Image (cartoon, rainbow, N blue to C red; front, side):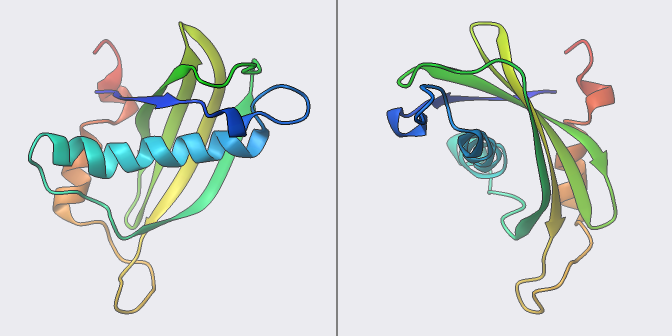
Length: 139
């Protein structure tokens, strides 16, 4: 499966060059990730998942500038890799079929008691497995 989030580009995301600032793309990824693990699950009556994780790495490939605030964009999320305590998400940020950026983040599950990494639970692994890129093809 692929998770899709529809997000609003805010006027404040635009910089002096008249396009969405590079840092705003990571905020868009963060908002889509929160929808993926929290808001979309609550909307269908499921308990939020992976609420105790941190981002260990983030990267963005900027492909086409976004010149307009106030537009809706699509952020598609798939899971690229599942590790013991970490997982990698891929993001495609697009508007009306034009891909503006691709991003990748690595998240690590964290124990709130010890503040150290922890293994992913079976429930988390099962949820994330449904979005693995190999299973996303053709769906």
